[in-house]
Length: 418
Image 1 (tube, one colour):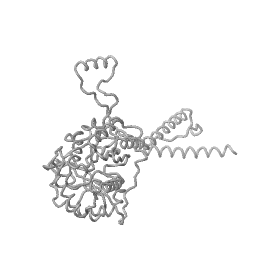
Image 2: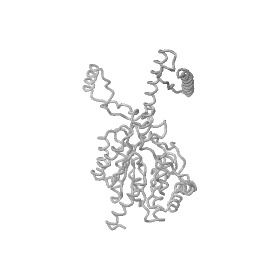
Image 3: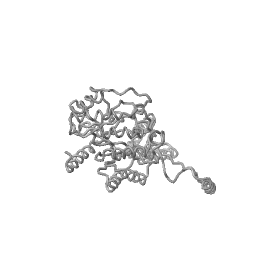
Image 4: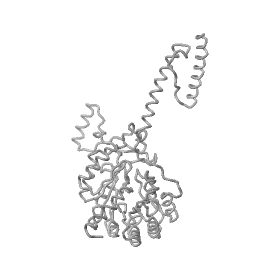
């Protein structure tokens, strides 16, 4: 009796199993097969099924890892060695021939490249809440205010991951001089053109009105690069700052600007406009500049603009930002901090580089939060007044603005400037 019951049960199991296999194959997946030989007519079929099961298990495990934490893949492109003297080159070639070594690759240093392999998946610490779509939310209020006045924000144009948090907190970064840049940096998603539309002459007035409606205490103004304008747009910025300060004298204004092609007169125009924080981003370490930024930008050109702004107005706060995850070494990051402190930069921020599209530089690695914390500690020990360092930190970030507001007001009160 028991044997008679087992036969239909086995047949049913085989039928169900057959459906499962066919269903997986139809969806393009490797079949998940039971290793039990009772469901197969020959030992060969059972052996094949067992091998398929093992292959599937390995595939599933690698899929979970690859899609889950971003710890595999990426790695960047090896750097080529710098050119050396004829004598040293001859020696290197002989050593390479003797040891069968590729003499074009430098000691473990890498760089980013468009189209290079990306890390597989993203780490868990990149999960951020989506912006609220509630019509009563501050996010919608800011969005509508910007739309009504035909203003742009870098939050939208550069696809910043913190847009929900910042806008719901009532802060945003307004982008002046239009939404089209004259440069083509390989990390940035902003539109580019050598001849953008002329700036809106009424934009400074619109911006001042928008900021007054928001009721914020700290505002960040930034812009695309405008190499097509004689002063790089410095006068446009200065007018905007003056109008905002006229409407609300206690408002703290940060201007995150271009390098103005290194033109000190433009730097001076903005530095004397009444702004509180002069910000310009170095973006990456010196070695990676030519791979990351437009050829018209430069490491020391950027640092010298920050230096001149401080020389023109010593009580001005200067600030810069770097992206990590582009192939930089720890030593290079620390050297960059030393170079910044040598010109008395007050604030530095570090954030993870995230590729905006497939047409931009691939991420070399996802830097762990512990590493960001390490750089924060090193920066504070070097004497920076404030260091913001974390995977989702951006050069203009709500938490940093709150801290700077407190710090600036406190220091000015102590100096009797308020």
